[in-house]
Structures are given as structure tokens and as C-alpha cells.
Image (cartoon, rainbow, N blue to C red; front, side):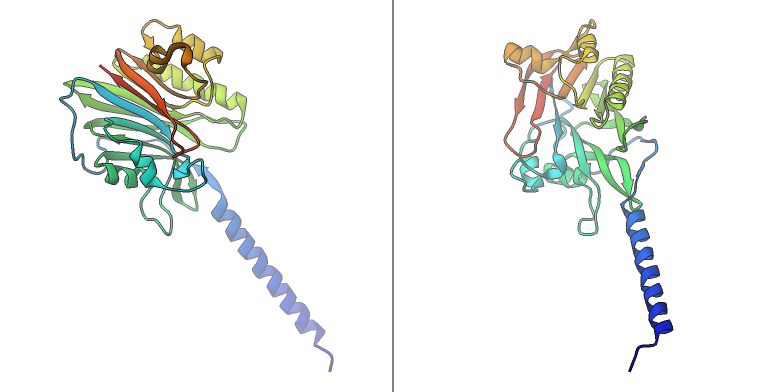
Length: 276
């Protein structure tokens, strides 16, 4: 007995329509869009051991590679182990909540370390905050702003995070960013925007983050040549300073100590500085 050709064609048409609908849903779910600007006056979570009375301020920047170490293993506990005894940490490549994990990675690290946290997503995927920067703090915040960075040539979305924290009766302005590396034109423009904001901030001010450029970049050279701009790691390590793209730069603060720690918890080292 031969199959009914019209019925077979209808079934094939229905199957094709279903396949197209599923593909459209998957495509829509995978699309990334930029988050807009945002602001607030408080960080999330509780500070277990405030350090507002300590004379020095210990800060770090760490691109955590979404918690994935150089061995390919994802382990936020190992990341947290790098961040002990710090007052302020700027985080890059931070993942947001997922179906299997209701907390973003900044919140997970904040709870583990007893620090307040802020997750500042730069991109949205499937209407969920997915990827961006984060901040951990043992100091009370007075304000925060999420500032999108413009892009024209590359698909990745990036932002800056400006936070004011109180330390020994003064507001320290902290600017955290992760500049794109996908296109040199976007990278250069985003770096220029970050430098312009950093140099316009009232002192004391700190610039933290993955700037995706090294010390021979003309913009970095120009910034370091400005009076009052200090590179704590370069001051301490001198000629032994390795090539780097993760930076801490300060104005209105003096270097006590600084260094770079690379123990495989990420594909980037952690950069730290003790300031006063």
C-alpha cells in the first residue's frame, strides 16, 4: 500500500515549520544586547569585617575568566582564596545568574568572603544579566554608576563602573572597567573614555581593570606621564614588572606595596596594591 502523498507533504511542511520555529527561538535566546546605564547608593550583601579604620587601603583587580582557571576547571572557591584580606576588588569577566545557579558570581564571592558586592552586567542574553564586571568591598559605598562604553565595530558590550567608597572620612572614587580587545578602533575609543573619566575624578581616585593594552600603548604612556598619576605595581617591581594588561592606577594616593599573583585560578593574574 502506497503512502498518501498529500499527507506526507503536510507532515514534512509541519516538521519544517516546527524546526524553523525552534531555530528562531534558539537564535533569539542566544542574542546578546547591551545593558543600559544604572545607578544606586548601596552595594548588596553585608560586610562582615569592615576595615574603615585601617590606615592603608588594600585593592586588587582580577579578571576571573568566569571562574575558570588555567587548568580549565571552574572553581570560585579557588578564586576567593586569592582575595583574602583585601578591602576592595574589581572583577572582570563575571557571569550572571543561570538556570542552575540563581546567584551571579560577584554575589557568590561576596558571600564567601563576607564582603558587599555589586554585579554590573554589560551584556544581556535571553533577557538575563549574563556577563560583565563586579566589585567586592569591605568599605561602605555612597554611590555607584554603571556607564556603558560605546562600540561601533565589534559585537561585544563593555561598561565602566564608578563607585564612591568611604575610607577614613574621605570618599575614594573607584573606576572599574574591562576594555574590549575585539577591535582596535573600539579598544582605543573605550580606553580613551576610561582615561578621561579617571583623570576628571576628584582625588583620591583609583582606576582598576583589564585595559587590554600594555605599557607601550601611547594612551597608557601619556596617562603615566601626567603629574600625580601613579602606577603602584610599576613603582614596586620596577624593571622586573612583567608585560601586563590588568592595571591599577591611582591619583591622590601613595604606594605602600604592590604585586602580581598568578596561581592559575584564572587565565589572568591578580594585581594588587596597598595604598595610603
